[in-house]
Length: 276
Image (cartoon, rainbow, N blue to C red; front, side, top):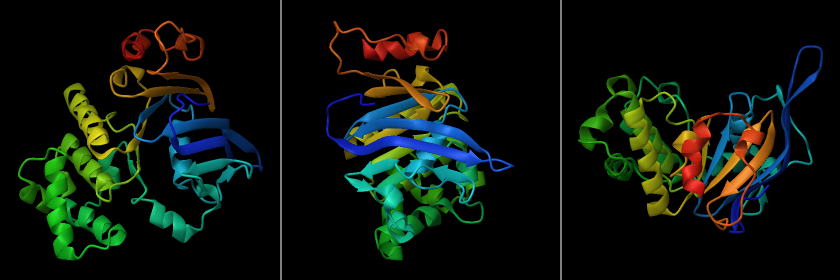
């Protein structure tokens, strides 16, 4: 399903994913979904818990558990024409962090508690950008300042537990954008934060997307947080895409109501303000 005619950076075509259960039964998670993430645009993937949003994100980077997950061989995940499902493990390691980066829901589960946040960002730069340790450290300070952390030198020396939840998520965003990825996947990045910090993180992501010209795939269960943030919205339910909506549709063209596809009550009233 396509939401816009703009050139696509990422194309997912007929993605079918299941998980093996006891007794050899295959439990479907994604049922032949197709979607496009255009260059320099933000696409919100919205759905209830268990709808398949995170499985979609993990499939893009091939992070599904080996042996437990099954991907249909006819599925395609194309990054600028390259089918990531056919790439070698070494090639995928080069893609992760450099071409595609990901921000997860719980920063404390992603950050290593025994290393300073500065060292963790520097490691990414040395691995993917081939920077020296000294150059990486200077770049870390610039990145921490870019994501709005005060006193970047002090924050770079801090350990994850010494930072607030919002500060930890800013560190994760700094790490994700460190190598200037073409696509940033943000998987429920504001769920664990209070409302005020949520808005700050959303604004930060929006500002970075415009400044860097990258694409963003923003995953959330709450359509109310994407009304002014995303260019396109894709609604998922039960492993299927039920609807796509774009700001670029003309005002006189009425799209089907999302309530037919996913009954989220009053939450859609907030999300729809951005699509009229």
